[in-house]
Length: 198
Image (cartoon, rainbow, N blue to C red; front, side, top):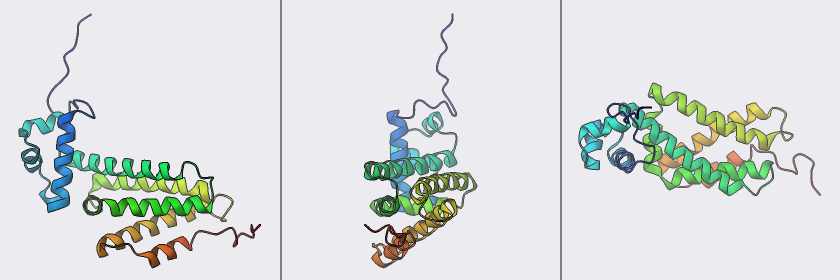
């Protein structure tokens, strides 16, 4: 039995939580949030992280892959915080409202990163990730809308789209927009509307 050496070079992926990989991701996040997506070049990332350009390719194939990883990290953290906030709640209208509020609050907590990711969604390699995350969010909302509305899947997809629009408006104005949030919440049926008052 022979031992194999770990391959180094383009795409070797020296571990998802490898310190150098995290330094590159943090540098990319900072650069993109301060200077925008156009500033996110391999050279700029490695310079900001204090590593040689070749080091980048030990962890990522190209610029697109690090942008995709930034997208994944942001949404993993965001979805985890939503789940933590709603874990003890029973499925239903109130949990749907809390999910939406948690999403909007999460986007507002990292406006520069969210702005960069919104800019990136026009990139073909990011579009499929956006679609996947939207589908995940709709699936979570569907569980809360089942039995509450006639078409839970379609309603959930529309709510996800409307929530993204509110997040974009809050990002653009750089402030919380309570009236838009209230309008969004009004699309979710209440127990009173369902004739479920006690």
